Structures are given as C-alpha cells and as structure tokens.
Image (cartoon, rainbow, N blue to C red):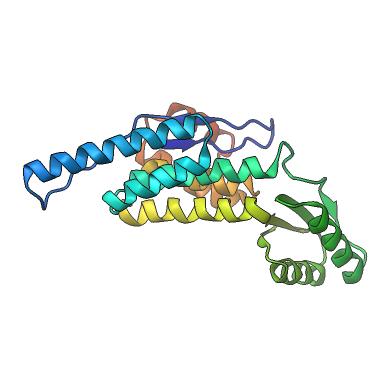
Length: 239
C-alpha cells in the first residue's frame, strides 16, 4: 500500500511513505487456479511497484490496471493506483505549488475574470489559488473556471473565499487519484491508508477541514501511526 503524508503547509514539507503491499486471495476457484492467479497477480503488482519507484508512472498505471483486471475487488490496488495518479499530477504541475503567486481579487467581477483568464492561459497544468472577500466575484470565478474545464474547490473562511483551482493534466490525474482512494474505501471501509491519502489530497489543495477529518479517520483506524499522530497534534482543537 502507498501512503502520502499531507503537505505541511506551514513549513512546505511533503513526505511520501511506501509500505509493504498486502495481497488478497480468491476463494471461488480451485486451489491450483487460485495459486496460479495469485502468482500472476503478485508478479503484476511487483512490476507495477517497480515502475512506480522508477517514476515510470504511465507504465505503473497500466500495470495496476492489469492487477485490477485480475482482482477488481482489491482495495489496496486502487489505493496504489491513486498514489501513482497523485504523483503524476504533481509532476505535471512542476516545482511550484501553487503554480502562480496567490491572487487577491477585490476590485470588479470583470477584472477578476480577466485575472482568471490570464492565469489559465499561462498555466498549462497545475494549481491556482484565487482569494476574494466578494461573494459575487467568487461565484463568477467558479462558474467561469468550470466552463474552461477546470476543477474548483472553494474554501470558505470567516472573511474571504479561497478558490482552489486545478487545471490541465494535474487536474485529470489528481481527480483520478481521489476517485481511486474513494473506490478503495468503497471496497474496504476500514482501510486507513486510503483515508490518509484522501486527507493528503485535500490538504494539498487547501481544503483543510475535510483534510483533517480524513486524517483523523485514518489515525482512528491505525493509532500506531506515530508520524500521523504527531502531525495531527498541530490541529488539536481546530476544524
């Protein structure tokens, strides 16, 4: 299973942990058939893990897809596939996160939309952050960004709205990652790594309350995770 600690925004630190993979066995086949499938399944997963470690993400995605053809009920594979998409999405974004400096939009709707247009034009793939204290501007930006094919995640603070916007291949792969983590939980609701990775996803795009909730769920299911426990101490009493 692959795990990603959330980005610690305060110190701009991101950690990725890759732990051992757990395999699930079939129970509707003969022992010989199950063993043969298990051997094939394990071989594909090892190849996928090796491709991931070599940062050959396209190959890793293909191999995890093959693993899911063999075991479509395997939550761990969905989690691992999500981690590949997550890392590939960040790779497409490049070294800067956000991709451009944060923009504060408090003049007019027209000016705000012009800023959005320019930001999307110069960001082929990545993450944009726009902030405004105007509800009208926030709604206009969200609508226009979605019309341009972006994914928008508003975060409502006490005095302003932060619009977290994913564009290009970064959007495509991060949304695939989120879907895969959710699928893992659909198959195995007690699976801590998928909760943790969803927390990482939402932390990365600035949705703090949802991120902390997922991370707390992960820690509740895996209280031996000392690193996550220490991280959550920063947010005690918040969210």
